[in-house]
Structures are given as structure tokens and as C-alpha cells.
Length: 460
Image (cartoon, rainbow, N blue to C red; front, side, top):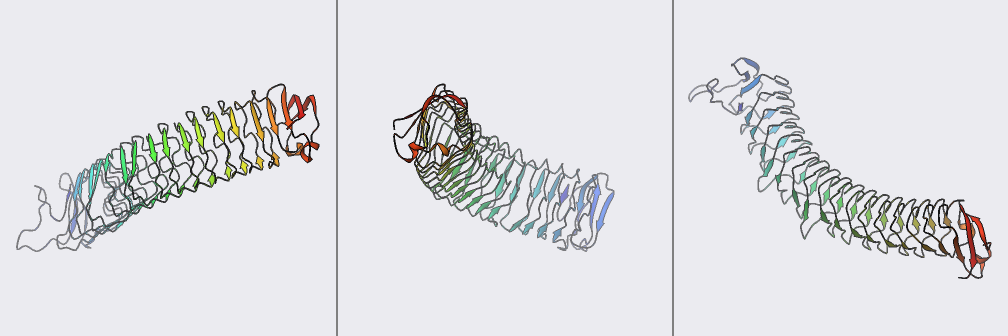
């Protein structure tokens, strides 16, 4: 046990009134044997580091202790409680890291800085109060500790929840982020598997990468009506327990894998200011429908891959490209309208959308890449006249595809297997006359693009 500035146990006592002040700090084991001492005032770096027998400390009580050095008590596994004296202004890096028996600590209002990892892996530490005097906290300060609740004083002195501040605090179930916080750092609450809900204050502008990653009990995230969040970092809520999310209109970017693996996420409302949705942002979720707002111009790869409950998807009319595998394995998706703003459909964009029976390709599309509609449920498709490149295997394995209305030249097919595995016979209808018509060879029983029973007729 550490009591600062004086110890009143039966083993150690402070100086009495009228006696000279204690000028030497000492550490003792459970039978009163001295383990370490220093008369330098401030506690030096690595003072009693790894001294597993230390159970109590008496500090100089002449106000000379203003800092506790880095690693000073690291891995003092028998320490159980600490009261830091009012003379201390800084607690160094990893000062109490891995003090696995430490269950109680009081940080006085004199402290202005706490070093990174200061209480990292303090498994027995169950609660903490951070005074408003603290203006600097290092990364991972409480990571891996046993904290279940955190109290910030009303005028919390920091504007950020720093990187990995509470990472892997598996017992953390209660925290209110102070209203003056403007950023939540990467990994801030990563692996806080007991945290059920969180409210993001209106002043927060960014949520860092992996901020709430693997928060498996996190079912609710609330943004205030006046939210200022502009970005949601990569993997920010990945593999969490979210069931629904409303992304506020202040958000401009949803980074890659932001909600990846949220297998209970059935509803997502995307704010009307979002301009880009990163790769895998909603992959492996339980979404049933999605509307991509008109503000979105960039739709990454794998964004909605393997969302087997997704039945409807509306793509905003400013999206310019659909990334590779974006809707692949959305086995319940029945129809899709690709807006005229889209110029490119990525490779395997709708691969294995086995229920997809209707697809409208916008007039702005110029390229349809490999496997874009492979193994889907289409019975017919119209290829508009601006398409100049149709890559390999585009409709491969779509066994129900029997009719193609084709407004492009035969040379637009840049491979040899665009229709392999489609219906037999396959009918391709092309314009009756004109430059496009002239590029086509008509007939029945033709071999074309991997299908050996193709009929080409000119009647569009």
C-alpha cells in the first residue's frame, strides 16, 4: 500500500508535529524491510521497478516530491493502493504499469500530466477519477486495466480521449465523454467488451481508427443533434455489437472497414454530407436495406460484401464508380439501378448475388469489369451504348441469363468468356442498322464469348 504524503499504518509513520520533515523516500516489503530509498526529492526513473515484494512506501513530506519518474513502480505486483500527494505534478511513463494488485488510486488536483502507459495492465484497478488539472495524458495510460467506470471532473482539462487510453479495459461499462472533448483517438476503447453504449458529444470532430473496435457489447452509439463529427476512422466500430447506426449529416468520410463484421447491424442511415465510403465499410453486416445519399461520389471495394440480408440498395446519383466486390455475396439483393453518373462497374461488383433478377445499367457506364455480374439471377440485361469495354467473365455462371439487349459494338467485348455458363440458347439483340449493327455477325448456334449456342439478331 502506498499512502502519500504520510503513512499511518502500524509499520511506518510520518514525522510528528515539531519534528523535522522527512526528506528521504523509502519503499518497504511486508515485514518492514527496506527495499529502496532516495533522497533526491523526485522519485527517479525505475526506482523500485520489478520489486515484487514492495507493499508500502513513505515519501518525503517536505513537498520535494513533484514527480514520479517513468517505470518507478512498474511491476510492483504486491502494491494494492496509492494516494498521490498534492505536491506531485507529473506521473511518468509506465510509472505503475503492471501493478497487478493495485485496486485504489487517488490522483490529486495538483497533477497536470500523466505519462503514457502509467497504469497499463493494472488488472485490479476498478475505478478512476481524472481531475480537471490534468492537461496532458500519454497514450495507453489505462490500457488493459480492470477499470469498470471512469469519472471525469466537470471541467475536464483535456480536449481528447488519447490513443488507446482505455484499450482492452474489458470491465469498462460506464463512461461519459466530457463535453469539451473534440477528438477520440485511435484504439481509445478498443476491446472494451463490457461497454454497452456511448454518446458522442457535439464537440467531437473525429473518431479515430479502431476507436471502438471489438466492443462486442456496444449496441448503441448516439450522436447529438448538433454533432460536429466529420470523419469515422477505419475499423472505428468494426466487430462491435451495434444493431443500428445513424451517421450524422456532419460526417464527410466513412473510412475503410468502419463497421466491418458488425453481424447484428441491421439498419444504417448515412448522413447526406458523406462524400466517400471506404473499402469494406459495411462488409459482413446484417443490413436489410441501404440508401447511399446523393452526396457520395466514391464507393470503395467490398463495401457491402457478404451482407446476406440486404434486399434493397439505392445508389445516389453522384456516385461515379462502383468498386470491386462492392455488393458481392449479397444473396438477397433482388434488383439494382446503377445511376447515369457511374462510369465504371468494378470487378465482381455483384458476384454471387443469386437473387438479383433485375439490373439497370446507367447510360454513363463505359466499362464493366471482370465478373461484375457473375453468378447472378438475371434473365435479361441491357448494355447501353456508351459502354466501350466489357471484360472477361462479366456474366459468367449466370445460368438464367437468356436475353441480352446490346447497344454496343461487338469489339467492346475485350475477352473470350463474357457469357460462359449463361443460358443455352442465349439471344443477343443488336440494333437493326447503323455503325454498331454493322460490327455484328448474325446467325443461330454461334459460339460467342464462351457460350456455344448464341443467336444474334438485329431487331433493336
